[in-house]
Length: 249
Image (cartoon, rainbow, N blue to C red; front, side, top):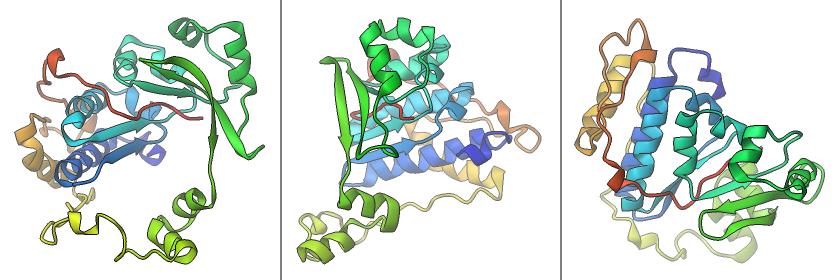
């Protein structure tokens, strides 16, 4: 994502990714969580924020979630527009940070002990686990240890295939996996639009998602993609929160 941050392609890239993820969440029988790393690159653009909020509002209908990660929580609270996205997230995780901005302290009402905890929290590269301050809208704040084992490392760091690990260690194959027959054979996954032809890609994404109220102006994209604007969003009564959201370091 960061490779596109300093180019005029960011609104198009974000829209194509969110549109594809939203369509996949709609048609998938499984729960879907979409994760954006380096999310601070997206929060500075009004059109990007509108698209993120739109996804959040509709995600509950398809058991989908959105996870946003950035270097510091300050990136989410330093302007009112960014806070709108942040406050739509029910779950927030504050991992290690060398310093905690005054705005972050005020937003959470952090105590001196909580600030010291964030500044000294364990990190994965230095220990067997990571620590964070977990903040939820229902249960308040708690200190949390995040641990990973061989399964997580295999899936995330190596093959991205859980069944390979399960077959090697547990003797479970994809054929034996529960729920394999849930996905109808005639369903084809939506292709992620290519981004080489910007106008065509945006038109393709918009054609499929138009029924969900996503409208983006494509005029003038050849000269300035930063002018892409989102259409009307659902009213506040349609707001809901994704099951998994927060930021990482």
